[in-house]
Image 1 (cartoon, rainbow, N blue to C red):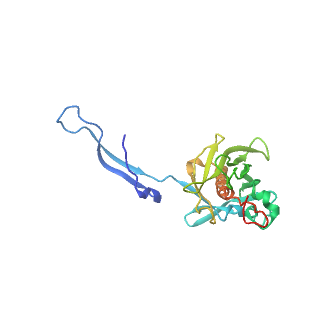
Image 2: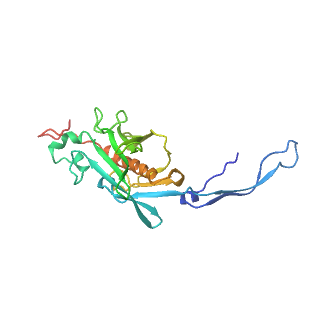
Image 3: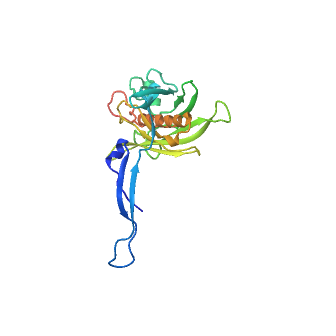
Length: 257
């Protein structure tokens, strides 16, 4: 067994020669004798070919999704975000806007969010929707690990029109402590190929345009890529869904309850 270190060049997506020379593969059984056999070894590390996709705008604004190839952007999908019972002008902001007292209940329960990924013909080929509402845990105003919100990631079922097949489940919650962070747990529910890497390029509170990298050997058709777009959209929206809830304030006081 050989152990070789990988340098920073690997992160730049360039081929790297890890080793080129003679290396011992054994020792002589006789003491004070010449070294054992050697092997001339040349180890080359090639980057894993990847497809790179990016949302052109924030997920909540139903952006177009493009395939990146150098400086070239090729439209490949569209993302449609919808939310029940909330103004479509800015659907997510209604959850933490303190302007309307009628939204108190909605500010305490984030549910009904849905994202559909469409191909260029307009057909829905992947989707994600909240199955367990994001609600504040007892005694606090955030979604805790003890009661995470959850998404179901689905893809079209070939056995029937307008039907969906579960692909995976995503849970998310806010971890409070020395470092405030959003945590996600993904569970694959199907036997479809898995793999890929998700990069939320901006952090919480910043404008986010999710970037998704997929190894080419995990993608056999456009639907394979679309399901990861749905998952990345759910991860991105979970950052919004896990924002602390504002406590309702009694009239005439500045104390929350």
